[in-house]
Length: 322
Image (cartoon, rainbow, N blue to C red; front, side, top):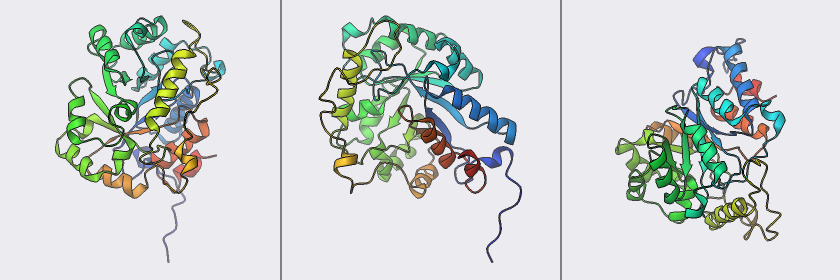
């Protein structure tokens, strides 16, 4: 006879997923889902005496350096009058870093002086919090930020990898990125390249990588780079001015997207979302830093993925999904 579940729920660290209890998470939703993230953290701590292992949140207003997604609708009600500076401090006071997604693919020298971007960069860097970071695509921006704030952590973005090496990325390529970058977001396609993951683990640098586990795009998508460029163009061309932190859309470019996402045209292909067995293989190699996307999605999507990946599944996860 199968064993019945206990009539008591886990408590403390026991509420975390027992298959990967030491996993740490970078969550999409900065400047979008902040109220919900804070409420969830407080509810979990008050109810179960556990601090969820969220070490970073990522996202950005749609300023000129932003890329990857046009994600931020910046609803005023979402953060109750917080300024960007106060919001960064609120996360940092909880031990959570903020990663600005400065991952535009089309930046040139003329864009580096943009006042809105520099304003946000200054706010982030001046907190002097070790886990604050910027995710970068263009080396020209990396060099600019390194000269201005040499101690600010820089991450090589997925957008960078897809732009520079859209088809195949080698261990040697990833190693070369450490000449400029402190951390690397592994390309989602490479989560399934176990030989590559083994090489990274054997190098002793697994802790310097972050792996996106719920990427909705098709594996080996042939137009990923084009979509990133299209988004970057929309952000630059659609930018409305210095401190107008409003949503950027594609209205100015009615031909968007230039290509239809292969999620729709090649529905027979799987997405990059990892199965639990695939994730466990990577975890067992020694990787501990993982990323959940969601800055361009409703809170329900983010909440579902937190419950699906981060916590114990039998009793805690169902209680988070209501």
